[in-house]
Amino acid sequence: MRHSNWSNKYTTFAVGIGVGALLALLFAPASGEETRDYISNGVKKGIDDAASTGRRWKRRAQETVDDVKSTVAGAVEAGQEAYRSVRDA
Image (cartoon, rainbow, N blue to C red; front, side):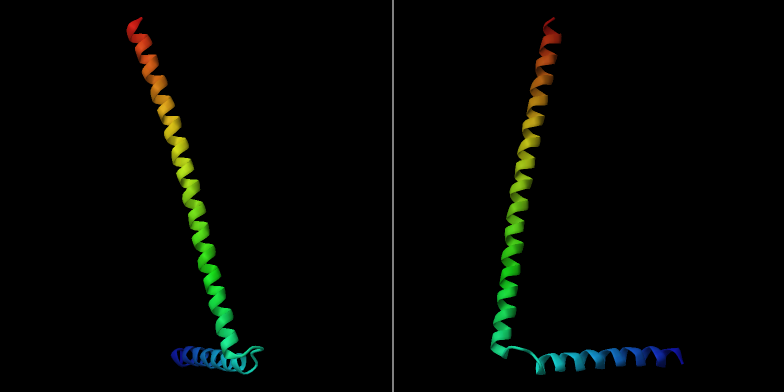
């Protein structure tokens, strides 16, 4: 009994999706070619935005790594200087 109820719900859902897609195609405000161009341009813009964001994150990460390297190098130099001054004292 439960399996049948579950199956009916998903069948009804799938039919609803199909009807919705069919109605969307029938009442689309643009031609198929215009719609494909719109979708294609949207995908290209999304890819370009993602690539730009990736480059920006890479640049920020490199700046952070460079800052940490500089800080560590300064700390090492200070530690070496302190060691030398204690050793020579």
